[in-house]
Image: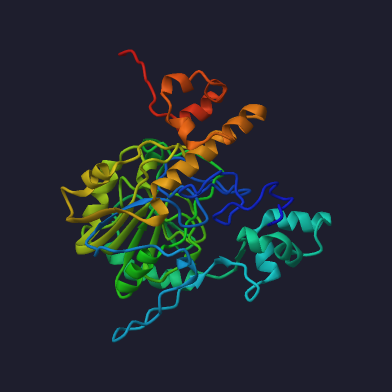
Length: 399
């Protein structure tokens, strides 16, 4: 039996993270002291691991599957018969017995750092041995990205719309004007958006090692690639260009591939963003897009639209040849059930919660009219009902 870490107050989750979310969300939010994050989610809503998503692959072959260990494997820096690509820089990685670094471990885990300072643990290593190994804790490495970013942006410069209002700061281009902030409803939040590259994404990075890949809504990436342009509304260390998805500051046909993962549900106008993505993708280029379907509300702080498989296809079918819309193991319906039931249980308390957790699947298949009168339904707070609702109802009056 795995012990419970006193810092988290719970046992490690099956996915190996000890965050507040009861199930593998698309990317859980990680509060960061002193960090302002996006409200309008051009960026991916944050998780520290590959999470459930549904991918529409345009211009890609079938049969792509993300591997659970994908984040630990980096594409080779040189393809056979091709020119060399500068090696990617790893900023975050999993703490293991072989790779453990005390400073990097404490840097990535503020709660452990505080516990060591209080004397709860003698060192980060002691916490790792007792809990961190099972919890899948990570390490954060310090690197100077300025030289690699400068070389990348030199390659990108001919594709930039420098006629649009912008400024340069710390070696980055900032197209995020106050007008765009107001138009797209960007608000301040302390959430940090982060996600790892799944295996299909890594293959695209390697395929286009001599070209440019746009990561549209990249968040804070744990790996920094020399050929991937990290486009964001938050100035993370890995951000290259700041701007919004509705107005991409790039010329037509600029990118060999584009990523948009767990982004379009958080924007006010996903059709406009999809049109912009198609505009800047080169003919024959590859799109890797993922949008949730049966996922509860996970706004950071906004969450506008989920999409069926027909809906994600509709976003792009007028402009791109959609090769496939599929479901990965990490987007399987069982994950939706896991997330929904776990979050539902979090909304209950005491005896009602215990009774809910003891219910069988068959108990949920009785007529819904009988269930909505049960304590586990009547005692669910309204914020949880809005998060998990079968549908929401709006009433309005014309101005």
